[in-house]
Amino acid sequence: MKSELVLPAPAKLNLFLHITGRRPDGYHALQTLFQFLDYGDELGFTLQDSLALECNLPELVNDDNLILKAARLLQQETGTQQGARIRLDKRLPMGGGVGGGSSDAATTLLGLNALWDLQLSEERLAELGLQLGADVPVFVRGSAAFAEGVGEILTPAHPPEYWYLVLVPDCHVNTVKMYAHGDLTRDTPAIKVCAALETYEEQRRQNRLHNDFEPLVRRLYPEVESCIRLLDNVPNSSIGRAMMSGSGACVFVPFASREQAESAKATISSDSGSDIEAFIARGVNTSPLHSTLHRRQAVHQLEACST
Ligand SMILES: C[C@@](CO)(OP(=O)(O)O)[C@H](O)COP(=O)(O)OP(=O)(O)OC[C@H]1O[C@@H](n2ccc(N)nc2=O)[C@H](O)[C@@H]1O
Ligand SMILES: Nc1ncnc2c1ncn2[C@@H]1O[C@H](COP(=O)(O)OP(=O)(O)O)[C@@H](O)[C@H]1O
Image (cartoon, rainbow, N blue to C red):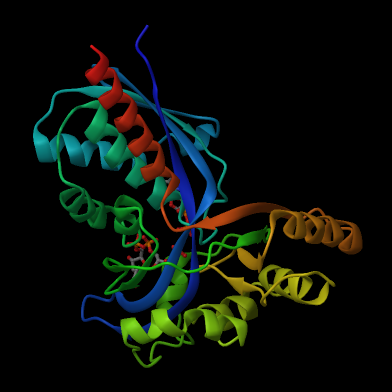
């Protein structure tokens, strides 16, 4: 039986997000700090003649899925005739602002590049990824980063790797509609990358970080507003205030340890008496996808040395 290459597709958080302008093509210029979470979807890749996607959520199996788009883009780019059975175990909330679709696309680009032995550089894969979505390149590169442009100009960053309690409000925020909304703030002054990175932790401690989507989304989606209030008002040992990721809907709050995040999660579910979906994950500056691929490469090198 052919073996399956199993790879993670981690979530991301936008630790802050500034919209600094709108380009002539309608896309927005951003400045944002991306960090990965050690939590996400899982993909499995098995060689076969044709392309096929399987998923625990059957409604995700369609031609618009970014996984199939990424696989076809790689076939077009390289002319390879190879195919694959791709298994998606969907765990991340969809339209949650934690980048599940973009991460699935990036894992597919790196996974099939390895499975099909295409030898494309990470730089080329990031360029291909940008054709699929503005958030794909950071997942291809695999390093926490300060991002500019539409999200593709990346400067590696090393924010503290806190534990996060993430609440998933019971609503879907449409990214395209939020970017197009008349009330969106689009004129946050641009900051210099070195200043942004040097002052990040101090700004965070002083609760001075912000996400330009947040006021608009809180106003339009009461579910997001009430999750942020819940995180800010329930007594807990968080080390900062709650913020929204991307264009929403997920909101997150940092803790110094997993235990503290677990205990806040328990308090929130007992105090609020609600069953809001939530998960705990660690912020990590190297993508779990890249850690897994490096381990696999090291094992292959060891095997090659011992034969
Ligand atoms: C807001 C962010 C922040 O990280 O994340 P999410 O909330 O989606 O996770 C991203 O900018 C989302 O990026 P992504 O979801 O990849 O966007 P794309 O598929 O490329 O674009 C979808 C649409 O969003 C708008 N768009 C996207 C990115 C950008 N910098 N400016 C835009 O105006 C465009 O209208 C575009 O047609
Ligand atoms: N593999 C995928 N996983 C999730 N959503 C996908 C995927 N491929 C395409 N999509 C589409 O992209 C939309 C938003 O994707 P997602 O990445 O989950 O949101 P966000 O960028 O807000 O985190 C979904 O509602 C879905 O229609």
